[in-house]
Length: 270
Length: 257
Image (cartoon, each protein chain N blue to C red):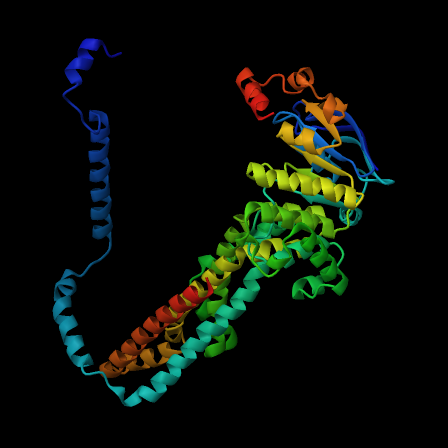
């Protein structure tokens, strides 16, 4: 209870937090610092190597300079392969993710079981990293571009399916109601009332995923699944640092290229 | 002829929204259903084409009992009932022609729907109807480029494309300005007589209801408590229909009237 008198006494004093809240906040901060300290102490950091890092960096940089373009034709060929892996995988993944999105959206899924199946596909696709998918598929298809495409595709299905499913859940139900009242079949309702509504989201999501896939497919070669990563791995293994820097520059150019293309497409289509 | 008898709708375990309601509509008369919000007007309309599943009772349209149809039969039967909505319920990103043709989705093949190759007869019919309501020149425009009144005309044409045996309109003018609202009401009245089509309209605007309808049905808490010619709707009947609404609200309804 606050009497009039005490109210007047406190009128010239204001603080954002009560004493109790302030103690809680300091407590939280201390706890966070303790966790960080504990985490640092539990991993075996060899501090000499950490302090040595700037020198090593300078050294490596020196060895990388100047980039060696003598192998440029095969680097460019590999980067082209990388673009193709990303593009093909995105296209396949888009096609496969459509039915997955349909059954994992609350408002379109036929029943509980299909919803559960859809969600399971999404979660299993998303919880495995592209590199791990690639390791799996290299074991199945052998090293090369096919393993890369399938790996990227498997990782993309979850991403595309989840975002598309959410787009389906956010549609306006009113046109759906109108077409139901016309006596349209389920499939025609999807065609006329749902597809037009998710079109913009569909293109935005597909372009975004293509952009991500472009970058992901550059590392696929590290596990033998084709693309520019193969050359990078080879160059690192043979300490051919000038070529490594050439590959890195090419990857940088590729990423910039992907960014430019996807923002152009986004502007053009949306 | 639409014959509704002993229609009851109950959501969950609460009070029924419709209580053993009887209503018969025939000929080319335009029937307005009035009543305060929550009286069950919208539920009544949606129970007719089973967008809302009735709990019990019978809905008979020209000899077809709607309440016992299975899903497939219901889909075919729904083609015979046109419906117009308060917020038009158009597909914004499609053209006016595609929206209008979507009224025929129950008839055409999936392939025709997908490729937008509509039957010639349907296209001719669409142009006729669009010409009639004055939107033919918008055929290739996207639906969201049109004004409210024009959008509702698209909604009306879509419903008429079904060649329906009855037209249901759920507050078709509630999202429109007064002038446009009157245009849509007189359009519905004229279409009813031109096409020999019975029309049922849910409406909040009592003045418009009295001006444009052949018959007024007043609902209160799931029952019909008034059913007569518009001229018979006097202050006493109005008070009864809108009873339970605070006095201030009633004054506003009076002011509009």
